[in-house]
Image 1 (cartoon, rainbow, N blue to C red):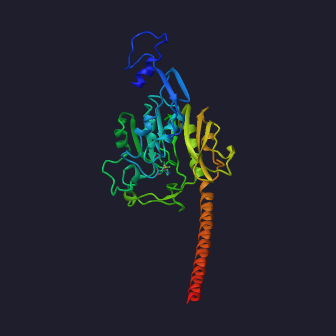
Image 2: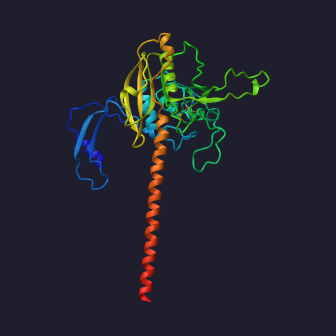
Image 3: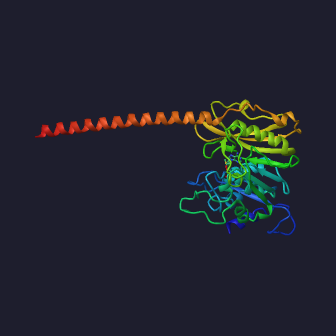
Length: 355
Ligand SMILES: C[S@@+](CC[C@H](N)C(=O)[O-])C[C@H]1O[C@@H](n2cnc3c(N)ncnc32)[C@H](O)[C@@H]1O
């Protein structure tokens, strides 16, 4: 009733024509602002707003894509808010094609597909893409048979936007030279929660005999952060269409951070760069690059990317923090043991005095 009375208070406006509550040609919106505190709400609003509704947000997608209700998730799944933010940065439209070359549990694919985009993904982890990794939900003992990225797309009625996901080591690209994507959206591994590995061996002139070839599982070697980002930028310079965007995260130590430490490529212009703090000392940058020119042969073979390996310092700092923590805990233990002994001696003394 109160709502209707408020609507009718706008009666004096010279707006004519039939009222269409479903699918109106023009939407008018009235908003009352009562402050941001849930307690002590004033009886009259601080401010009121009245205007024409020109566009609506997509907040409802946060609930729809919530990890709590998603079929297939794991410890690297990215929350919907950040995934949608990345999709937004890529500025892709209905009908575009995107790739996530470090696809993991496919969180970015579902977010991007919500914008009508066709999605491809690849990852080196066979068990993950086949839904065979250990479940991460506390009460779940075993993964369901049909857990997969494809099942997630089906859950959100996005199956028609799913092209496929493939097992692939990113350092050994299998795409045709002429293949171009409208955007590449990805969260490469930092080697903290998941391994940074690529197919390879330290052995010289290693040859697998024909006899062992059918059952041979290739060995893996370390794939450092500088190489991952060098490969990613070269790949983007080759496989993005002109004006297409690369959206990715890059981990940094906050005290060392300057724009100079970010990965660069002559064919890609950095157009956006924002920070998500992860801890007191570390954060990651959300980077958006735009392809501004096609790459020459030299630009496809850049050797030195001049990128710091985040992991080198991460483990040293973590070990240092742990050592300081252990020392503090030992000092506290010593202090408490000492004061308890003192306390007991004091009690004994007062007891003997009483006697
Ligand atoms: C940070 S996770 C990506 C998380 C993903 N956005 C999700 O929602 O689950 C990085 C992924 O890179 C994969 N990866 C690591 N090394 C790789 C390589 N050499 N080639 C392709 N994928 C690799 C890991 O298996 C992992 O799934």
